[in-house]
Length: 121
Image (cartoon, rainbow, N blue to C red; front, side):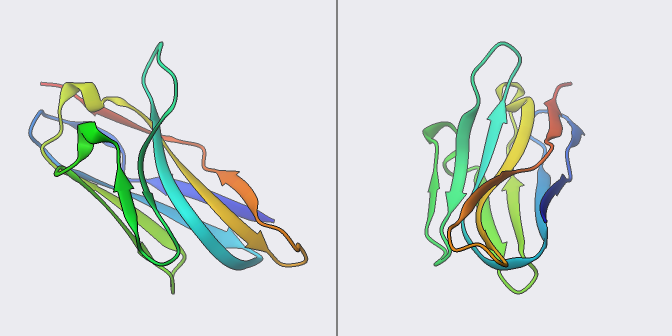
């Protein structure tokens, strides 16, 4: 069994920073691409940032220059450093990972439970 657990959300003032972490655990052979998504009330879930197994990153335009995604392959963790936060960044943030687990020939899509980020004064 594989699990993704996010942490690091909370309440922050505009202009502040938060660091989200996603930890994968279980019978993992390899982790391919990992992405951070967010969903604000009444809106569709959107991809915020993504990092490949080789470390290539891409970001949605609204967070470029403010957010940085990184991964530690030895620890099976992915972080999202969020700086210069704005009220419009308020959402539930989800970690998504494409993982090959022990006993499976193919990769599977896994999601974390989500962590709330609220940017407000």
